[in-house]
Length: 104
Image (cartoon, rainbow, N blue to C red; front, side):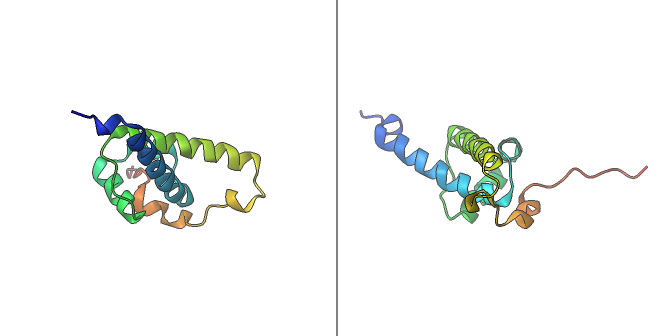
């Protein structure tokens, strides 16, 4: 029986999905570590918000996190380039909740 999950076509499809997700997530201002720290349910909702079927493997999410780091590095080297400007950082709070400071 053929293993389609490890074919060249499947690898290409995973890479395309990772790029779509990374593009959407980067504009929100979410970092790779923040993405990987999210619960699986939140990541699935995030993928749907990006109009992409949620990845079925952690491998794809790790690839997305790596792409986010690469884009962050590139944006730091080219701060004046239009592609280095995030467009929806105000929506980050919907996905990544800051820690709550307890009252003392």
